[in-house]
Length: 257
Image (cartoon, rainbow, N blue to C red):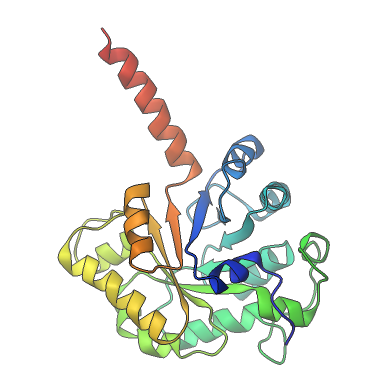
């Protein structure tokens, strides 16, 4: 199999934890502001973000120009959606609410060309945007396929999910995971049961020699997660950064009077 041309796989091979930025807004200026910060990866959110497929044609070139690796979180486990974002140039896909090995197999099948999967060949934009010559072999070696574990059912089926050939790893969604265990939805859990769950998912993923990512709300928690040997940490999002900075400015001004 050809060597991966995905810079993220090279970063991981050096034992580093990747820093992932989150883009929920379709605005190109916001994306340029995010891209200029120097993230390792930038993920465009088509699930809870305000982004449509057509927006990827604007956002992915901005991400690629910055040197970050373009990812997409698709709205659901939908093979058509997965193949389309890959054809648009995504080098990684995050798929929400994976709860069974069969769902993980469907994810992998959509991400890999035959003989390793069932992806249809038609890289309409990816063949122009990749950091190397586009080929079936390079794509199969390069695309990162992450299954989101964010429910009790997903945790209970984790060994079976991790056993699926071709899966790159797990991406933990802490808010839905908290809801599934009866806690309020939030990033950066401190409840011992939830912290233990993060450790369990991380350990099991490492036991299978796969990658594990975590969505964080603050940089302090992301630093902690990197210390737990997470392979990828996400901090906030473009819209949350704007919201937080705007509130800080207004509150500082109001507080002066």
